[in-house]
Structures are given as structure tokens and as C-alpha cells.
Length: 613
Image 1 (cartoon, rainbow, N blue to C red):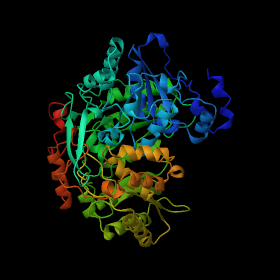
Image 2: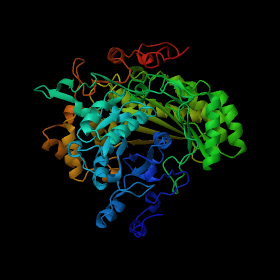
Image 3: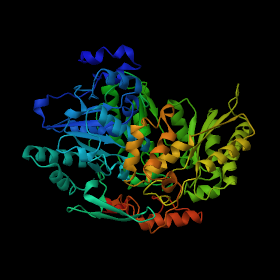
Image 4: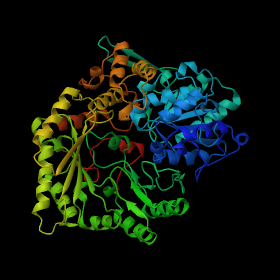
């Protein structure tokens, strides 16, 4: 039942279903029957958060624990936030409508750097002190995990502890330790010191960071018995890890309004710019039989009319033909759409297109990433122009007339010839279409959409030491793309350059950025990933007032010998491997994918044996 104080505000706002809970699949418990209450917070809107697979999994994992009740909390959009403040309504969880301040553990998932100020805003709206130093007792312990936790330092002032890597097991260990600490009346400091002994848990307050005169880090020193290196957690057995047999079914359309089954974690490819491809190593697959059972259960329990195969590279799943043959019998019979995202250019076949054509009628999307072969070799994309053209030929002969190609601007060693090559490759795709005698005839012809994002160097990749192009350099390259385009059959788009610069700052920043985040939030910066709410000038002011510069973090090349803000964290990838890959990139030398040849990245130590039999 929605409280009357909230219900009376719903006619005054857009999308009131964001704030009322009660959806099919919600889990309710009696408060006096649990000893730990966990608020799972997604620092963005309901539609974005409810599309996130990790939240669905951990919601189930936590609520399967008899001593814990996990509830959902999302960032309210500006219209509802205004009403909340006017009527003194604190940010609340959707299951109980209790304020954030009522919860024992407040957990945030870190999916994108530009959501960091939303974390501060949500804590404040929920009546919880924003800074960790101001939260004295065990109550309102703020924790965080997710991919951006690989460099947690910018959030060190606000988050009590971080969970590195995959969360299904470590989050249960954390909750049980918290339960013990709560029952026995431990101090917050005693609990954090004990929690730091759990594998994969990083407590920033237990580490001292010293700086050199030039602003680089001199040393990172553990205290109070904290480990010198914190190693990420992974799930070794994907077939037997908890996976929900039902999802909460939203009342309104979300970004990804469908069921999802997770094929595998990790990626064999080793693209040198791709953080996810390194963070989630080593590759671990689910069996096709398990996936079919999970997919059928989701469809029958939720009524979703679409199921997506989730992974970093769906066509690299080794049992894809068996899975499609078996699962598509079920989806076709029940009129369920099967979505296959993340397809690779170099293993796209007529057989795969035939299967896709049964379930997908829109255009196809591929990611060459760079316009010339030299630059594709630099980034280790392992895709040739011939493979791009062959894939497009298969698509066009199969009846498709639109293709979307993803590229990046500002990749290491990029020249203006490489930039022009983006459009030239698009033109070759257009010309290919009109060269085919059996192409689909009709109005409009072919459409090639080219999307060019700005390269952001990320931790735990071979490019973590590389500078990002300055905004001026990126703008010049965008102009060059436009000047190189000679046909209306190609449509160009790109990301706003200053958001990419801020992303680079936060991705590779140190804990001094905590003051910047706090000042920017105080100036009204949150929902920074939403274009209409991004105020770059306020961020610049916050940087200047803190005595820091964007250029120091985003546009500066790091030396191999520099202590990086995340040097005390271990994601299983050896630094020597990343350095080797960086050097090979400068020579435009490729590294084969993991199934063809082991490149010695060291991730196999996390599973205690070879990645592939």
C-alpha cells in the first residue's frame, strides 16, 4: 500500500509508477523476522536500474538469506525530488517505503563513473550522512561494488567498503559478518578491520596514500592488518551459482524490457581498450541445458515476450548452435522474441543470420571500432576489412538494408587518416550494397549509421597509461569525419566530448577527487550522464577550487613506473601482461584470442587451472 503522503504527489509528476513498488515478483518479509536490512541502490532512474541484470541476481541472492531482507532504491527524477523536498519525504525503498536511514547496509552498484554524484544525492535525500567519517556507528554502513569499483578511490570519502569482482558469494559473507557484529555490538572500526580480511573486500580507510610534489602517488600503505593487495572475487561454477527463476516485472517500460539469461562471464578477445573484457576474465560459460531451463523459467514466471542472451560477445559462446536449436523451438512455439546482442563481425555466418532473421527484424549492429587495419591492429580488434564486408554482404543478401557501425575517436596512435578511414569504411559498405544484384529493392536503399564515441582510457587495460585526446583534438577529428563524408546514405553521430573527459578523470582518479565530487554535487551536479543535466562548467569550478585539473587525470601519459591509484588492487591480470600488450599496441602487433593461444595474462590463477581444456 502506497503511503498517502506519497500517493497525493503522484498526479503531479511524470511516470509515477517509478515510485510505487508493488510489481509482480517483489519480495516482502516481516521486519521482525530478519536481523539485517539491505537497501540495494541503483544510482540512476528506475527504468535504467530495473534493466540491470546484476541487481536482479543480487536481489535474489540476498533475499534467499533467512536473516536478510533486500529492498530496491532508485534515484528519483528531478520532478519527484522537488516534491519530496517540499513535503519532507525522505528517499525510500520500494518494498517497505521505509527511508534509507532505516537500513543497516546501504549498497550501491557502480556501473558508470558519471553516476557518482547521484550516490551523494541519494544518501542525502535518504537522511544518511554523505561522508563516511560522519557515520559513526555500524548502522547505515555504505558499501559498493560493480565494474567501477576497480578504481574506487574517487569515492573513498563516502563509501565504507567496496566489494571487488563478482558479488554472489562475497555479499553473503559480508551480510553474515555484519549480522554477527550487530548482535555482538562491535564498533564500526572493529567491523571494518574484520571485513577487510574477507577476500575481495576493500576498506579505503585502512590505507594511507602519500603523494609526490608533482601530484602523482608516492605510496599506498595498508594499516590495521589490511592486506597489501585486495584480489577480486569470481564465481568458478557458473552452472550452480544462484540465478533468479523470476524477475520483478515493471509496470512501465524500462530500457531493456525483457528477460535475460547470462551465457558466460569474461571474453576471449583481448581488445586493448575494453575494460570489461579484462575485468571479467577468465572466461566461464554456462551449459546450454542450464540456459534453456533458466530461459523457460523466466518466460513462464514473468510473461516477458523477449529474452536476451547476455554476454560480452554472444557469438563466442561455444555452445551457441546447440542453445539456439533447443531454445528457439520453445521461443518460436510460444511467440517469444530471442535477442542476440554483442555479435562479432569475424564469426558471423549465413546460418547465424538465418536464426537471427526469425527473431529480429531491425537493423544489425557491429563494432569495427577503428577505420583502418593498422589502428584495428593497434587495439587488437582482430577484425579485417574483408570480414566487415563479408558480414555486411551476408546481412544485405539476407534482406537487411540498415547497418550500424560503432567506432571510437582518439584511440592511441590515431591519425587523421585513421579518422577519415571511418567514413571510408562506411562508404565501402554503401557501395557493397548497391553492387549486389540480389539486394532488397525498394525506397530508401541502404542506410549506414556511424556512431563514434570518444576513447576513455580505463584501469586494468593495456591503455591505462595512455592520455586521452583533449576536447579540442576530439572536436577537430569530428569535423574531419564530417568533411570526409560525401553521401547522405551515411549518418554520423558522436558523444559529447566533455562527458568523456569527465569520465576519464573519474575512471583514473585518486581519492583527492572526493573533494571535487562533493563540491560538484553541492553546485547541483547529479544525473551527469543525462545531457540536459550535465553542467561541465560547474565541474571545472569544483576542480579549480580543489586545486586540481582535468588535464592531470585525463590527458596525461603515465609512466610505467608510476604508482597508479588502483595499484593495491588485483583483478587477476598481471601488470607485466598489460605492459606487454601496451608495447605491442605501439607496434601494431595483434595477440590471438584466448581459445587460439594463451597470452599469459595470469587470470587462470583465479580458477586454479587452465581456462580451456
